[in-house]
Length: 343
Image 1 (cartoon, rainbow, N blue to C red):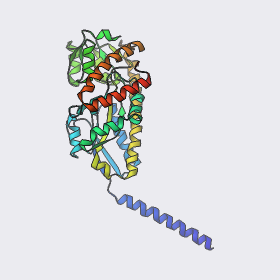
Image 2 (cartoon, rainbow, N blue to C red; image 1 turned 90 degrees about the horizontal axis):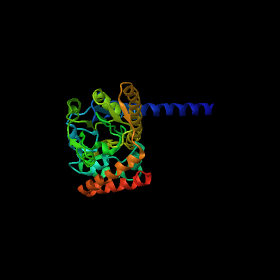
Image 3 (cartoon, one colour; image 1 turned 180 degrees about the horizontal axis):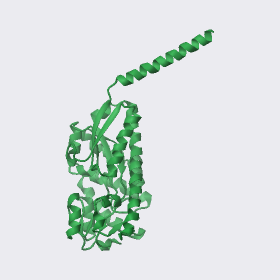
Image 4 (spheres, rainbow, N blue to C red; image 1 turned 90 degrees about the vertical axis):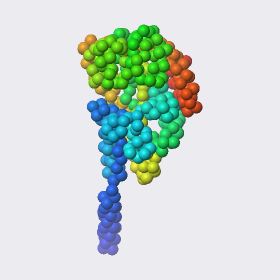
């Protein structure tokens, strides 16, 4: 009888503890963050970011609510880091290269042109070869810390003329972004034209440019480029950008340790969720493009090694822009040699 009574008391105490704990959690106001992304709301990559924010709310049992916003919804994209530093935004999902004017190393870590062939290679360098630490070293003066990152895949060019090897760039008028990408294609003989993304379709249509560097095949397709340009390269070789999730340092410090770990883990899931969903979308689009007469061109390993040798000249030139840029580029070159991607 005494044993039964003791058991009842233990159960009652346990239930009371759970109820008190639940009440305490319910009584706490959730931490609320605003996070602006680099994508328009139409992009699949934005949708994967929205899903990441929803997942964080579930995993933290509602203690952290991240409200996502598309590019430019709160501040212009290039002003994202300033907004983060001033706590106008508590988090940003951005391409760090946008801030290369503050530190050239941001561009070197965001997309080392013609370096990698698959996201896992860059992801490994970030986690295990010092990339994450170097990125946070650059963000530290702006009271910011990177929690994780994602990839949307290796980008493919869209062209009105076939580009089967690096000699085919000679004489082409090519839309590229500023920085290392422009430096590479100038070395390959292209006539570089710097245009905002919104003007690429019109420029291709009117013959202002022959080819354009934009994004992955599925993203290029959403822009309508393949309606007028019937050549593309896949897999791509010249660009494999990284998009980070970076937060205000003061806000980060306020988080309980378990939520910090949840965010880090959720970022890893978001990274591969994004990569795999976009890859599936790319494959779907490839099938559609072939039926529409678009030529899919794959470069040989020999040609990839040749263009990477030219890219090394660009890396070395860019490394002179700052000590941090040199540190980041030298570290990635060492890793590329381990991978067998550099001879």
